[in-house]
Image (tube, rainbow, N blue to C red; front, side, top):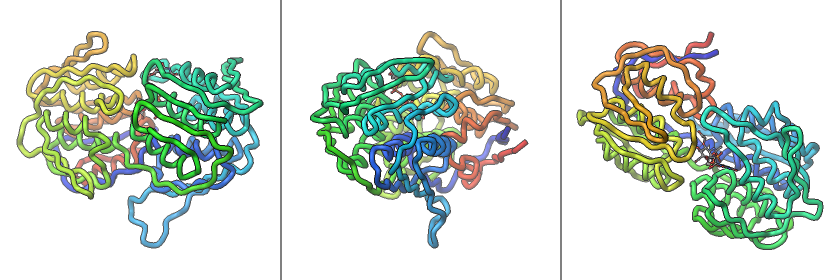
Length: 429
Ligand code: EPZ
């Protein structure tokens, strides 16, 4: 089981190439199930979750080829996947596959839309919460699917095909919006989705669906309208840059000090996080090449933040901000409103000497002058990187265990940080 060893105290200076967004690549790959033609995706990040989804799609009979390096490819260029779902041979997504990568549950949408049936294992919870899928099933029922649960599997069927409907989500759900959007593209008639998630990854998937022949308008706003079509065709689409990866490295630079260019990052995808970083004392500037983040000598100022659906402060950057606030000059407050158990990193940060108290959804962080390195354990994807951020600033050595969590969502993390001056290495046992 790999570990990551960090010796803290180095500033970060240089350039980090931001990869394609994990949370766009996954639904985009699943959208390939909607057509018998080939969907080509560029700038797909090399992540464990992407590899796991390739296995799940392969189980349905989807052929996926990843194009190797081409002459002239830049070192950090994302991979290109050719996804061909000409013949779906199996409409079942088994527990042993779905339980390892929850978003694979979303295959239920294209399967029932195109094949008129699906049997998909309930994904189960994870470290950050129970992660129910009741709203995803509500959306499919509204579109005319019969939904039942048997033996831990959701069984969906629509022998006559799906029909357009109005789907009003009682709460903002990214997964619910993805499922409703993909299923609606092949439904007969018009679908209106209200209180839809506005995350940029939704708009990225909608843009790809429209290249495939779908008629989607309003993606990225709370009201999405889909005119169903008979069939979708192949297309080529480039995955948008990962706003969470960009925000994570921005927090790391704010923590260590220095100056880093986040190449390929787009500020409009993470403006709320950039605003918080400026409040915390970082210098942020953006140009067509990406986002420049710096902190040279200024102290880290405390902030008060509440996580919220886009365009609010993203829950996926909450743990990283908490690590930064541990070194602030004063007390900060971070309230987590999206997931019910997303403070698993608190007890691990405490091992660095952090003083954090929890009161329901709100964490109060007393800024301390100096962290001390320690052996720590990653519990979930984003919590694990908050420990890396703390280790970069801590005095002495930090050993982060269970880094398979990191590999799910951060491509070549230690390479990217080492190239900017961090003392960081992966130890494979
Ligand atoms: C997506 O998860 C992301 N994952 C998460 O990123 C992200 O934290 C989350 O959206 C919020 O932005 C991917 O895109 C693969 P939700 P998702 O449906 O879609 C509740 C990461 O680290 N809910 O918006 O599962 C749910 O429990 C991951 O990359 C229901 O109650 O999130 C949560 O409290 C972590 N019923 C809230 O809604 C449902 O049917 C938001 O969930 C669905 C969701």
